[in-house]
Length: 141
Image (cartoon, rainbow, N blue to C red):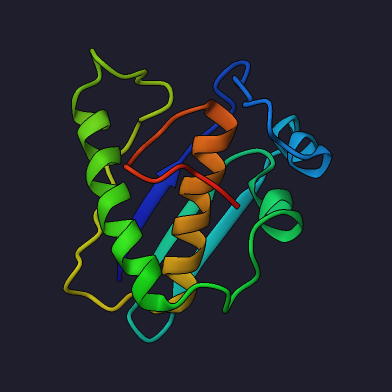
């Protein structure tokens, strides 16, 4: 089994953008350990995300499963993973506390809907919580 891992622990204070809802603010301010395991049994891939508040945000704020097509999610994830990995590599230019580990995402592999859905939503959560912009698209809900 190949594992994709994104590990984010609380990285100090977040720089929340001013257009967040009360539900989103509550998720961003969460300090409880929060681990989300994303896996696809068919493809044997998984992502483990350790980020306080992400699971709360995913349940309460994110668009529901089925809102986006798998093609949309795959296309966005391709772009976001490339930028994420560039920031991990360029740790003098980008905060190494935010960008700790590279993500091994192969666009030729079908990771399934759930893996793509949760990875995409993690990117949205991360960008909104830490006021980052990983691609040409604003991280909207």
